[in-house]
Image (cartoon, rainbow, N blue to C red):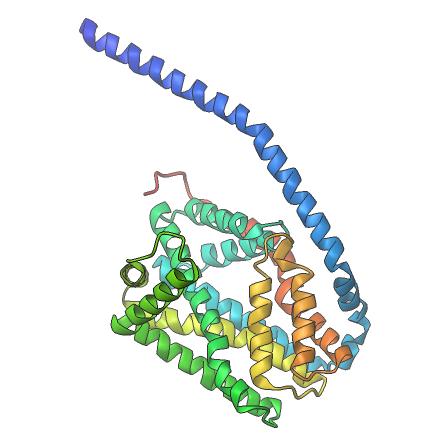
Length: 362
């Protein structure tokens, strides 16, 4: 066997020593961080416990109405279930478009598992996203493209639900309008269609998005005069928009339609619950109640905003003109289909998630 040059052997020994030192350093850092992570977890559990204690009365009122579910005709329950399935299917297709894959199984399985984890773990949004990322990478998808795709999906869906209350303002200013829920549903379709049109406008032209960036930048700088002023918010918005378009590719129109459909069908299930008990509140206020419920579900101190959503949605439905007792049962029915029923499917999703052979991911 040929002898290696002395300097080459020395280099290898040095590299081996460096690797061992790096490994030892990582182990030591991990050991030092364990008490910190433990304290952080204890603090979060304490915050969650206090929060659940504070919202327990609203939770108790909501759950105590479960016997009144018999007021719902079986057909209405089936409609609510179908609308929630349609909403989730839109999200699946949106993620599939963003991931640029033709495979359904890894997308469906990872979304079911991550959604369930997000709704049972305090501060579960990031934890659920991390689980979905890991399952998609294990299924053979590229790590870098998966992270970009999930980010684009979250930004797009958040932007849609953020725009909905703005479009409800004209109806609020105009005052009460006596409508049945069929007409309210048609009005909702029109509102969501307008959101889709605005989304297409912002995705394809620079001027409207840049104008919003300038207005937001000006307002922020005036509200916080002692902080360093922003100067590049319009440019940053355009850059982020371009990254989303680059991620979605030529099927961005389909992705936009999925984003709108995801919330349209979800909102439709709330309208169906109201229709099932014969309530006729103001549609604009119901839309605002729906958007507020979606915002409250992101409060990290309880799993899936548990308690906060029930209290907030019930109160806002009462403000919209729903009888207090009816508001409680409507909230229970809506949360039953949008929050509780998907939880067991998380176990199914994790079980059927495909596992590819480990390969390096970009």
